[in-house]
Image (cartoon, rainbow, N blue to C red; front, side, top):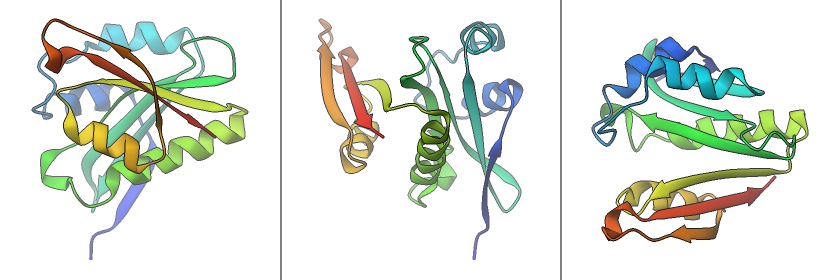
Length: 147
């Protein structure tokens, strides 16, 4: 039986892990993470399975209002998918957000990330916006969930 741990993490761990995610064609740099996260309250969660890095979830107070928390980046390494890790990371982020007084969790994804679209709907997020692109697969879909 596998042992899963979710713990606070670092930008360095996320940057290293995102290189192993096939869907991330242009991963963000350490500098971009630092730029976005250092300006506001933020959370970096790391999931480990039996001591191995398995996934991450990163969010921050993008709107600087203390009300809406933005779930910016997250992924589970391919070999650890379909084991409930993404859901566990989301639940931990939701608890943290509630404790900090946030009322809404928001994120966006692209139409091409079908697993993420299903994940959002299956975890009670509502579609609240759509930004079309001439390449439909790159259209952005915005989700929110009241906490």
